[in-house]
Amino acid sequence: MIKLIHLIFIFSSFISFNGRIALSVFKPVLLQNKLIKIAPHVIDTLLLLSGFTLVFQGNWLDGEYGWIISKFILLLGYVGLGVLAMRLKGVNRWVAFVAAIICFIAIFITAITKNGFI
Image (tube, rainbow, N blue to C red; front, side, top):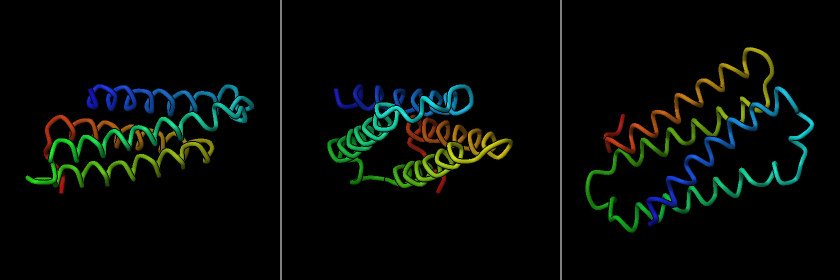
């Protein structure tokens, strides 16, 4: 059940990020809406909590856990590049956006294969 909740928040976070990027291009004034400002933080917090729950509930720290560290490092990259994509303009925004998406895909692959890059 926790895994399903985690997957729902993963996709919600991804859709939220892409939606906010689209809004920043086409309707930037909507980004000032209180719900649009708060919702991504709530989604991402619940995503992290469900992830931590999975790690501890599944005793994944007892065995090889390099993949969890890789996911965490990639997550930091995804968040940092996502912030840059929201703040920058022009080509730099799109470079940061694509790099963030690449981090997201790498997190997804790492989660499936449980094979860390470290």
